[in-house]
Length: 182
Image (cartoon, rainbow, N blue to C red):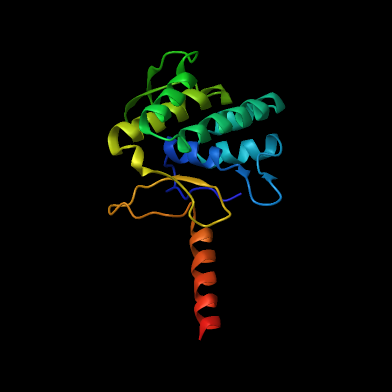
């Protein structure tokens, strides 16, 4: 499983949403990357949610898979309104956020002691990304047949691939094609 690179101690809920959405690989044959509670624990721990990682159960894996599918709906939406409506539906039954201190500053958040926080945290982070940067920053990997998703945070809005692996794979295939053509 390829996880978004984070600086030590960094927490990035958009990256968490993208990594969770990318735990299903649609290549042939399809590949479930969120196989068990250990996989979910690795994703949570990678994103700095150690208490939730420790508390994760098999039931949480099923909930995370269902959430993953609903998050992917926002990336494959045909327009901004559809993406926002999809993410707002995720928040419909979520508890209200509360003000929490994360050691350095105050922020709005949820009880992160169990994986139950995943839906409101990831949906809110993606909604904030749409509000701040626009829906056109949401993308699906151009490295066919990959269908990984990403949020383009580059300055020049040029991101086309979900990860460096896909970008390298396409560049190598293009290079091989040019050599064959000569």
